[in-house]
Length: 174
Image (tube, one colour):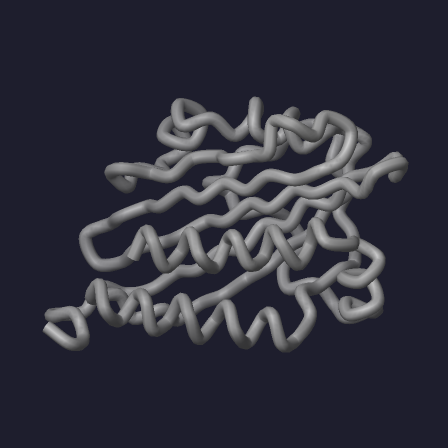
């Protein structure tokens, strides 16, 4: 499932970092799914919530891929939420804030978490993404954080995507 989720993240990062203007034109003025970060997700200072939403085709694709991937691991994904922010900080600041240690302290306890990855060769522009998981007795959650900044743009965009699901008796296809 980790490989499948990493593929989803890579797709999201490519779409967002290939041009936030392109993403912005697709996003439009749609409503936000969340009004604040979840209680178990630490908030980095300097972020301002924005009325952005993932484009419908990306949202639907991400939901279907996560549901299929979750089913193969015995997780029925029931909930998918997104919230967006902007910040004058950089994607590397996001990566420095959302460390394995901070997220584990907040309850993101899945073994072998991916954590945050970025393209270190781009300082002013570029992007990064993080992936964390949380396992409970009867459910599992996945958190994806995508931060990107276009070159010469003063603000970066930060998207938080959360997938929650119930553990099922047996994985599909097993």
